[in-house]
Length: 131
Length: 282
Image (cartoon, rainbow over all chains, first blue to last red):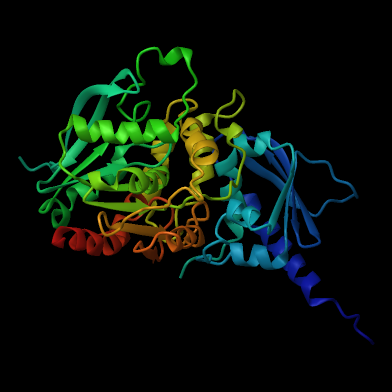
């Protein structure tokens, strides 16, 4: 049987998305955060629903055109560098990434800014543990 | 007494800045060459507390850190409630010189970080003869904006929290958690609109590109120290600035971000002590 080839880049994005979906549900902080955030790891989307400061779900959207409050997208390479245990300078923060045009933020930024450290900490859950 | 009593002493001094009397809080420790310390935007002089407790520094320097009016324990001048705070290049220069005059400091050395680093360049340009040496930390003549400062002061976002969360990425990942969060706490404590008002100088009024001619580093040595993790004032920004100032001495500091003296004092002293040694030998 011939195994269909999968582009290496696509599978890397899928791996990153899976990693985030596995780790994010354990994230919570005691503050009243309620928002829907769409992440894109390369071509792979993950819809994150936060309710009362807890990640209620983090999964690939079940239907096209998912609605959200805001979206963040970056390449597989950018997410991989951002998630290194000690990221290199310029790859260590979402605004460092956006300043170098490696991360795009779209949508209504008010919920993002109102809960910015919460979102930053949530996005960092994929970071490899320090040795 | 067994409790850890630090050598830092805090006092208030009142003097006029731009025609308004300001009651300014400052802390100091040590004796010798006066070393005036300028804090970053939206913060206060506590950022220098580690240098004020370092006997390798205070044995030779009188380290003095003041809170700009509107910051820390310095109130805004009377009538503040009827105006929007905006720091300008002219006001900032006048504030620094007036503080040095108020304390009758004789050709002090001066260190400033971030907006304090930017004003170091302007002081070198206009008033180099008044200083023994100038140290710009995270200093550049210009840096590219990376967010809209209107987020810092609006009704539907907590000002202190968003200020701290925005700058949290400017702290290097290697910096100890205790110092990272102490640095961020100051941003959470700032008055409404004050960080944004400081950034008026940084973003709107204080573009010094092409305006720094004539700096004489023979008369007043200029040292520039920038952390590799500072993506606001990047090492490239500082190197570009220094390339236009003959004699400026630049060091890019490893494993440090935008708040070196505060976020990782142990790492920073490895870079600032050689500079202070050189100034003391002048």
